Image (tube, rainbow, N blue to C red; front, side, top):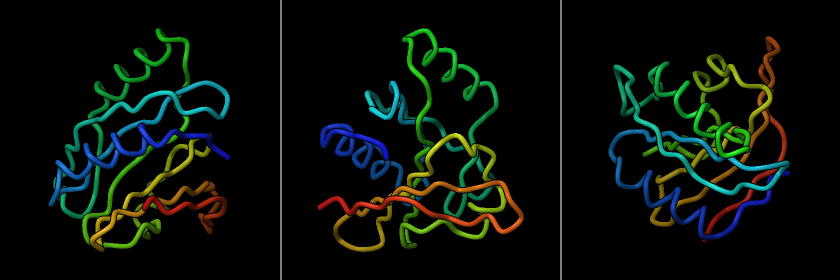
Length: 135
């Protein structure tokens, strides 16, 4: 399970909220299971209201910055502007990071909610793990 401070959660939610009505995306980075920073990334998807995609060079740059700070990526975070904080079929089918947590922030209701999942690369792409609502 990840350990993440309220300040990082608040910063993440604030940044993602600024990207509405589009999905936002970024990385939680840190050491071990401790999230120490939030790195917002640009969503370059063709349909950014319903999907996210990070430009490959920006992804590589983020990984290099993370490594330079002697940290590792812990979670890929993205938002669902109008859907619940549950991995969509697309999220599960396109997931390429079994070593990372999948964090989804939902803006469906007045109060943003985030949940954490571990998604496997198996054909079933089942989700499991922790979830926590931010209030």
